[in-house]
Image (tube, rainbow, N blue to C red; front, side):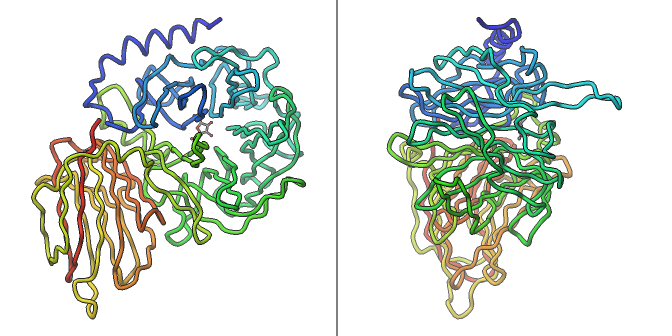
Length: 497
Ligand code: FRU
C-alpha cells in the first residue's frame, strides 16, 4: 500500500518530466527524472536488469526531504525511469529517506536498507536529525516498509557514537548465507568510523565492531561506505566530509577516500595498507559499486560535489539538477585503484576520426575533431626527447568565449582540469590538480564528454578527473595547445544517445 506522499511524488514526476526535453539532459549519464538528485542508492542487479535508486527531491532543483528515485537499465547507459520507490512518509523517516543499498533475498524479493531521518526537538532548543537504519521490501517496482522499522537505532551504536550521524548502510551476503552491512558513523573524537553489523535474515541486525576508524586523518564524518573484495585485496570506499588537503591527493571539503587493505573473514578484521582519493577532479562523491553478472566490479558516483552544487545549480533553469558519473570498471594494479569507462560505452561510438604523429607547437585544431558527446583517446609524446615540452592542453566545449581544459606539465608532473571559462558565473572551485609522473612527458588520456561533463581517464585508468560543465551546447570546439614540441596520436568518436 503506497502512502499519499509517495502517490503524490509519483504523480508529480510523471507530469513534470515531460517538460524536460531529451537534449536538455545528458545523453548517456543518468540524471534525475525531475528536480534534484544526489547520491546513488541501491545500485544492484535484480531480475535481469540493473537498478539504480537515488537521493531524490522531485519538487525543486535543490535538496529537500529525501525520496528515492528509481531507474532501470540493461547496459548501465540507457536508463528507463520507474516510479519513485520511497517517500518520507513514516513516523521514523518523516524527514527523509537517506542513502542506502539493495539486495535480493533468497525468496526473490528485493530488500532496500536506508537511513530514516527524523527531526527531533531538543531539550536545549532547536531540532536535530536522528538517523536510524530502516528496511523496505518489494518486487523491483513497489516497496513496502518493514513493520519492524527502524532495524538499527542508537541502542545499536558503540559507546560515544552519535545518533545524529549514523547513515548510509551498504549490504552484502556472505557465502554462508548470513548478511553484513557497514554504516557510516561519528565517534566521540568527532571524526568518522565505519561500523559493521551482522544478520541471519537481513531483518534483525546486530552490532559487530568498528571496522575502520578515521581518527581525524581524512576529514571528519565518513559518509556512504562501500566494502568489497577486489583483485585479491579488500577495498573500503567512503566519502569524508570536511577534508583538509594533503598535497594534491586530497582537497578541502567533501572528498572521496579509497582504503586498500586485507580482510580476515574469520575475525572480520580489515587491515589498511594504502589510501588514495577515488577521483581527482571536482565533481565526484558517494560512489557505490556492484558485481555484474559477468564478474566485473562497476562503480557509479554522484557527479557533483556538495561544496559547489548549490551555486552551480542556479545557472540551470530546465527542471533538473544532478547526474551520475559514468559507470566505471574498477580494479587494483600496483597497489592502486584503476578505473576504466564501462566497456559497453564502446557500442555508442560512431564516426571515428583519427590522426597519427601530429607534431605541433602552439595551438592547433584537427578537422573532424569536435563535439560535446565524444570519446577521445590521446597519446602524448615529447616532440623532442632532449627538450621535453613544457605544457600540453586539450581544450573542449570551446567557442570564442568558452572552453574547459585538461592540461599537463611534465616537468611538474601535474595534470589539471580547468573549467573557469565554462560559463560559470559563480566564484566556486573551477580548477583541480593531481600528480601524474611520466617518462619524458609520455601520457595517455581518454576523455569522455557528455553534454554537461568531462571525465578524463589518465594512463589507462591510473587516475580520473571528473568535472561538470554547463557550457552552452553550441560551444563544441576542441583544440590542442603545446608549449614546446608535442607529438600526439588522436582517435575520436562521437557518442550516440
Ligand atoms: C551524502 C549524503 C549522505 C546522506 C545523503 C542525504 O552525499 O550526505 O550521507 O545519506 O547525502 O541526501
